[in-house]
Every structure is written in structure tokens, then in C-alpha cells.
Image 1 (cartoon, one colour):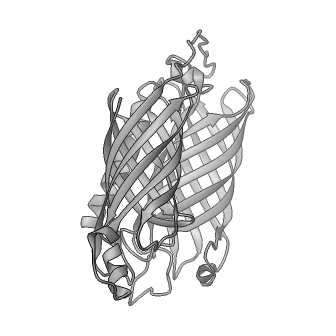
Image 2: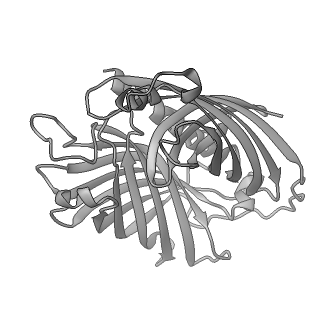
Image 3: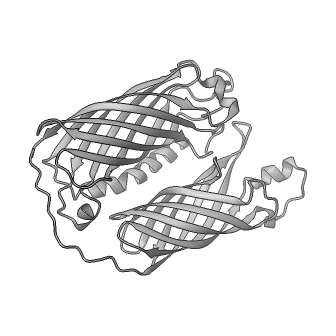
Length: 365
């Protein structure tokens, strides 16, 4: 029950930014979309190949709002679409993996110039996924990829949409789907799925959407310091053992290059209790200094209204034991609750190895 509560809070936090952005969208104008999928699981670890028994097939249903430029951020991002997706994927291995069920909000970002007929889109989605056959030490010990039913879910997709009539639209694309629980429960190698999709959309309401085109002032090129505190939960191998708390504090310094992009740098430190387990396994004496890490990083953030998608590339300058290597990375989502208050859900990784989800709150000057 505790795991369910944790993931439910994750889903609500990830869903909130899109629901708030949807407040700016005209509710009388929307699309329903049905898509089919075909693809395969990517074996990003050699010991995952035994789980791949066949191809992945599935389908999804989408409920999509179209923006019309009534808000400045909509014009800046070329009138993006905001949607909610219910997805089913058969993972090709009913005994060890089962299927992936997901519900998640997403944004379709237009990449090409405005056209009434054709659009090239980048789809970014974050939400909650449910694996029907996770690891079980008795019934399903072969599944070394996923240790929990409920998982964090990410979808990236490149697609092209073509209006066939004023009511019907054809969509085709290629995408990458990822599901993992951020080491809240082990095993947690995660599942990566590459698929192609094809489907149709039907426009309800206003079939001749009039796009507003106002003059928008240039973005102020200025620095925005941030201070964010985070906490995470991590289970170590073997599965079913103790969970550990991790804490972190990061100072980020972003410079606005335009409305969409911010770049900068930062410094951070963490106190990771899960390192106690590694110290014990190595028969090393415990010291609080061995649980501390500090690093510097390069920061990038893609911004859409109040939502930002941060990416960090960093190196530890203080790490006594160097269990995970010198380099760390971070992806996730942040939401400006107010002009200054930040809600944070990020995943810290070391190259392709996820460490843990970071839940936090911060302040921006």
C-alpha cells in the first residue's frame, strides 16, 4: 500500500502541470485519436535478452486539446497540442513481463513552420505505467528488469500529422517508451521500448481553428538562481531488503537565452544512506563522510509556460568511495507553482543506470 501511495503522488505531481496548462486551452475544441503500435524491447543490458520473446504490439486512445494562441506561450511554441493518453502494450512475453498499461499527459510541440495541412511534432509525455508481471522471488524470478507493478513512465515521439479533411487527420510516428520505478523497488533495470505508430484523429467542435498572432516582446536575458531541496527512496539488491533515504540540495544558475531555453550551471551535494550497504559489503568502517557527495554541473532546461524539463550533466569533485563513477546526470520535470516556488520531480542517473527519483521543492529568485 505504501508503494501505491508513493506512485500515486508521483502521478498527480506529473499530471498537475499539464492539467493547469490545459486551463488555457479552448475546451469546446478537441480531438479524439486512436493509434496502433508495433515495435520491440531494447535490451540495454546483456542479462535482459532472456526476457525478449517476441515483438511488442499495442494501441492507445488520446484526448487532445488544440491551443489557438490566446496565451503568449502558445504562440511562442507554435500552438502546441496538450493531450491525455491511455496506452496498452503487449510486451511479447506473457509469462515474465505481461503487458504495460499507462495513462499519461503529454504535449505535442510543433517543429516545422505553420501549415494548415501538415505538422511535424515532438511529443513529450510523463505519467504512470503498470507492469502486469513484475519480479516475484517465487512466481517470476526470471524478470530481472522490473520489480514493481507501478512505475514512472516516459514517452518521446517524433510524428507527422496530415489533415485529410477538416474533420479527419492521419498520424504516423516513431517513439521511445521507458518504464522504471527509480529503484524504489528492485530489480530496476527498467524497460525501454521502440515502436512505430499509425492512427487517425477526429476533430470535435471548431473545425476551422483561428490562430491568434500577436506581437510578443523579446525575452529578457537575465539570470535566475534556484535553490532546490530533494529527498529520495532507494532499495538495494537483493530484492525485498531494506530501503534507504537519500537527501540532496542543489543550487542552479540559469540564464534565459529566449522563452524556450535556459542554460547555466550549478553545484550540489547529497547524503545517500544506501551507500551504507555498499560500505558494509566491502567490510569498510562506516563514516558519515563516505555518504556525502558534491558535484558541479552543466544545466539545460526546456521551458513551456510554467513547466520546465531540466537536463543536467555533472561531475563529482567530492566522493570518497566513487561507487557509481565520477559523472552524474539528471532528467525530470519542474513546475512553477508561483513566481518563485518550484515543484520538482527528477531522476538522477549515472550514465545509463538510474539511481533514484528526487522529490523536492525549491525557490527561484
